[in-house]
Length: 88
Image (tube, rainbow, N blue to C red):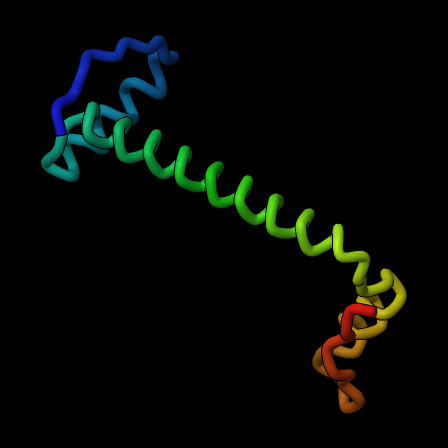
């Protein structure tokens, strides 16, 4: 895929750390920054998709109560561990 120039301002310490990492990894600072930006955008997209899916599920009106979830979590690693609560 072709690339286009993109300029950004960073503080000197960040620039230095980026350049040092690029040298250690035998790559360019630009490649590291591109990978970091791509990973960030993918994570944001995944988070938005998860929120949208949760809203769609919540719109069905079925929920697990706070008390049921708290009781289940409190039972973890105990002799009387409870099964996961079910949405109602």
